[in-house]
Image 1 (spheres, rainbow, N blue to C red):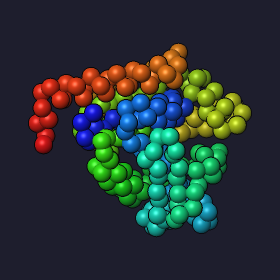
Image 2 (cartoon, rainbow, N blue to C red):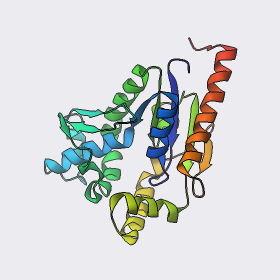
Image 3 (cartoon, rainbow, N blue to C red):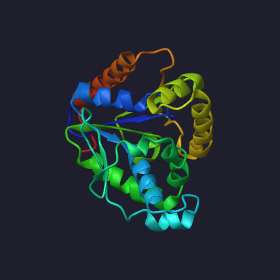
Image 4 (cartoon, rainbow, N blue to C red):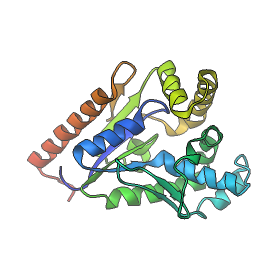
Length: 227
């Protein structure tokens, strides 16, 4: 794979982005970036500091305060805030129900998108970045763009299993997040749409990896005109 290969994987919660992205990164020997974890980490920090996450001014004021780090190793993902491992607490329902509100604050998006772009630019030999707006905002020049989706019922079932919550609560939370995240969840015009409802994780990984190999091979044959 040529240096600097960027694979953008976007889609709604529960579509399988994280597992698929880690699998693709491992398969191709690339780095991995979970942008959602960064928003969750900031949300966790705000809650831990007693900040009202509905207070947009207060959220904006604290956006750049904590030091947020995420692992680039797809085999060993972790998230840290000011050196503290918060990989587990950022996945709780309390954080899940608040993160969309925090992520919608312009100052939050500006700060974290700048960090995400820096991580992507420094990744060698390349990176699989997953989120909701990677292909449209964070890395619009990504060589490979995928929009991964699934039926609402399948997404809710996966999330309920992962988080240990009831299916009813998960569906309600999912519907709320879909509404709040709609503005940041557009599919890039040049992205490949993959519906994972009836696909295994291995099939999704294979499809994305095959697309990446094809695009990278084409780039190698024609020459990278951007450098």
